[in-house]
Image (cartoon, rainbow, N blue to C red; front, side, top):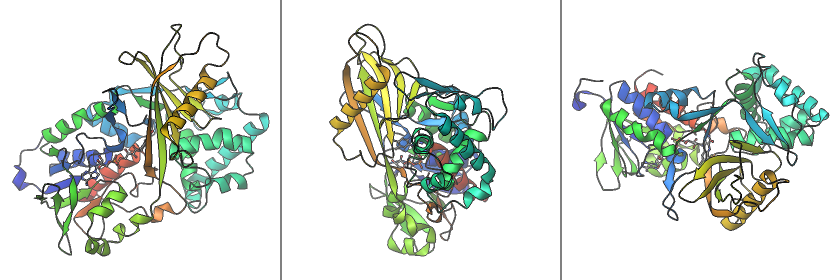
Length: 456
Ligand SMILES: Cc1cc2nc3c(=O)[nH]c(=O)nc-3n(C[C@H](O)[C@H](O)[C@H](O)COP(=O)(O)OP(=O)(O)OC[C@H]3O[C@@H](n4cnc5c(N)ncnc54)[C@H](O)[C@@H]3O)c2cc1C
């Protein structure tokens, strides 16, 4: 793709091989820069990847990762990596409410923003009063536009819901369910601006925006091509290579100190590590020199718990037949059907609890027991015979899963470029306008790459 030798080209080191770092490195390599991507772990993908479970030797996803039709940056990257066809799309979303009752959310033929109205108003989960309140709330969100939304950045969503007279049932069964899943934060802690954005861009903006995508392969497989794509474009990828810190001469970054004592020099540097790691990489004079680096300690985080469960099928009947289920009245918020697992001889279900502030410090066995109980309550309702037994379970706690989009968060989120002119920042926590998502990470990587090449 490029003809210049490595030494003729402007050189860039990208630190961190999550989605932000991959996006930045791919874009920079495509623009002809001599890119070196370094990643401390043995594989790319960061938080959005898989790991090998030492108990079974299986490749498990760190947690189910969901994307939506509105994730245009992520889809662009998947296209570039040649993996877009590994995403399976779901236009029909399943919600469990009253025992034994499943409601379905699917767009009809009406144009946006009306495409989901009929489905939502048909939900048996909501009373008539709750339906009317949700419709009023959606109308208010539509009327806000982006200007009205931005004015809500110092208010909590719980406050906004109260100001808009939303009954508790609508809050618990609808607004909270969507916001906690999308933003990994509770309505009483999350910025109303970000919550409103979820409904404006994920529900109302277009007929495709709400459609949910899930990888049909282990997440790590989505990045198999990334190393090759970067190398084919003239860059290189160094795995198992951790940065210990930046070398700084008072004006510019001069290199990245590696764990093996070597220093990797370059013209430009992109940091694509989480904000709490970046603090550790920056010597004090560097932090003093650049306002972007000063508020990083104030960024709060929020936990997510993922629960892998395998159930046998004593009567040949799988416990779950739907592809996924949103549990609207349960501490377990989502269950994903990962299919039959030959190795463990059972159906693999994956449960997710976002904004798990109250549960994250509970013992793993207790969390597993609770999740299994919720699964039975929802999926084995009124079924005869002996219920499938849990054959294996694995709880994964991510205590600092994502940054917390609390009111005022945007004052702490830095832009890509700043005072230290050859240091560019990327990561889902940067100033992307998006919550902590794969989409936000990719956008931040593209923005950093554009800043490096002078494109913005
Ligand atoms: C449990 C869980 C569930 C989630 N669910 C969803 C979801 O459903 N949908 C969604 O869109 N998002 C979800 N997210 C959020 C999503 O995973 C992140 O927003 C996104 O992956 C962040 O990408 P990133 O590149 O900014 O950071 P990271 O993925 O954290 O990447 C940073 C990389 O830097 C590396 N690194 C760190 N320090 C160093 C160093 N010193 N030297 C070299 N490398 C270093 C790390 O190993 C890592 O690979 C979830 C996150 C978690 C934890």
